[in-house]
Structures are given as structure tokens and as C-alpha cells.
Image (cartoon, rainbow over all chains, first blue to last red; front, side, top):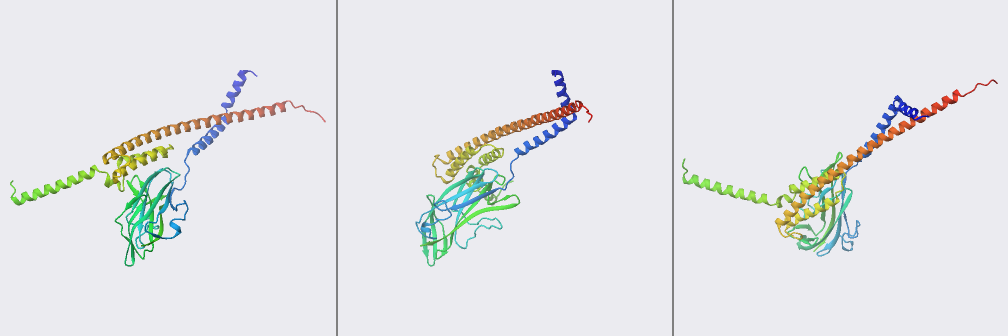
Length: 213
Length: 163
């Protein structure tokens, strides 16, 4: 076999209709596969908030596991925020101290509690990662007035928060409410609820306790 | 046109009230504190937007996020007058602002580099796909033709024998 015959053989193959069809088909299939591989996975976005006790468990929130606490009892909680959104998010955790009659967040309407927060913790979290922040608190001053116990001052992460006036009958059923807010660049503000697919979502926790004064 | 004393008094009051309102407006504009409670300064919003865009393009942004959190901490120090890493309101605000501008620029650069890299990767992948398709088509057709040629040769080499 001479080199010219080999060349003419190759030329014959390349110029044939069969080769053009096979090459066109394979090139289209491989290119499509390559393009599909570069596309991002479509998945549901979410963000989660969990409040854990001192041992990073959903227990041990109060000293001796007693829901009734006293002035000066120290609580060491951990707040964990997981960012399962498609992007890095700037989150705010708003911590509110409520009595039994104050309004808590509304799951159906995705509305936050209208009460003022005692503390706000803000942090930007990378996607698919978790931010853990300590929430150490105690009641610095709680007074009894007739049948009511009034929380007047708390210490949170070493800072005193005074001028509170949260009262409950016999000191029963106080609540720590933690709300997760997400920064919306378009609105230039934090939003309590956000859309994920066709659903609107909001995230919050609450932990009940009693106070003896 | 001359104003009587009543009219002059009214004008004076108007000027004083207007002046106070203008002063209040200027004071509010020079401080971030009001805006900080819920929204964030423009430079911070740009940095946040830049980081999100960079991450969406596939860039590694954890270092930028650390810097963003540090800058936000400076703003909080300014807001609460709890100066830990800066000495005054103005110093905190200026440092934070500078950090936000740097983050915005770095995020844009990071996004550009990642996009360029991604484009190069896509181009080379498509190129490889075409080359592989060419080689496979050529080899398959060559083998097919060789096989056919072999069969033809075998057929031509056949001898007819009488039983």
C-alpha cells in the first residue's frame, strides 16, 4: 500500500456522506452532554435556624433542666444558622423576649412578631455552610409586683439590656423568640419571609420558660 | 411691596422653622445610624451584591465574606459606640467604607477571572467533544470499510467446487 493510496483512502472516508452524518451526530451529542454538565443543579433553596443547649443538643437549655429559672441563672445556648440558599446570604437573628400574651410570628402569613427585639445578631454566611453563634444570657433583674413577675433587665453575651418591662402572671410562660431574617438587596432591607420556588418561607424558634422572683 | 410687622414676624418664623428643618436634614444625612438599623449603606450593599454575583459565577468567596463581616462589625462599633478595633465613629465608618469598596472591586475581579476560566473550560470541552467525535466517526467508518473490503475479498477468493 503506497502513501498516496492511504491518503486517498482517508480522503474518501472523510468526504463520504456516512462520515459527515456520523460525525455531525456524535459532535452534537457530545457537545450537548458537555453543555449540560456545565449547568448548575436545580434544587430547593432553604435556610434553617436551630437553637441548641450548652452541649449542642436540643436539650439542657436551663440549669438542671428546670424550665423555671431564677435571677442570675446562666443559660448558654448556641444558635445555628445553615445557609442552603443558592448564594451567600446576609442573615440577621432577631431575639425577642415575650410574655404569654404578646404576638409570636405567624407561620401562615409569614409575619414576624411585632415586638421589639432585645438583641440582633448579623452575619454573612457562605452557601452550604453553617454559622454558629453563642447566646449566653441571664435575667439580671426580675421583680414581683402582686401576682406578676416582671423582667426588667437581662444580660446577653455580656451586655446588659435594661428598660424592659415584660410581665407575666406568676412568672409563667415567658418566651424567647428567635427570628431569622435575610437581607434583600433589591428592597435594601432585611425580610422575614422569602420565596423558594412557589412557596413563601419563614424561619423562627421559640423556647418557653418560667421565672421565680 | 412693604410688609407690615405681622407679616415680618410670620416670615421670620418661617425662616427659623425652615432653617431648623434643613439643619436636621443635614445632620441625619451625615450619620449612618438611622439607616443602619434596617438597611445598610450603599457601599455595603454594593459589596454584598458583588460577593453574591461572584459566588453565583462560581468564585470562591469565603475570604471576601470574612472581610465583609469584619467591615459590618466596624459599622456596628460605630453605631453602638463600642470601639474595639477603631477609635471613633468617623474612623470606624471610613475604615468600613474603604473595606466595602475593596471588597466590591475584588469581588468584581474574582467574578471576571472565574467567568474567563469557565469560558475557557467550556470552549476546550466543546473542542475536545468535536475532536473525539471526529476520531470515533473516522475509526468506526474505517473499520466498517475494512470489514466490508475483507468480506468482498473473501467472496472474490472463493472457489466453486463440484460435489
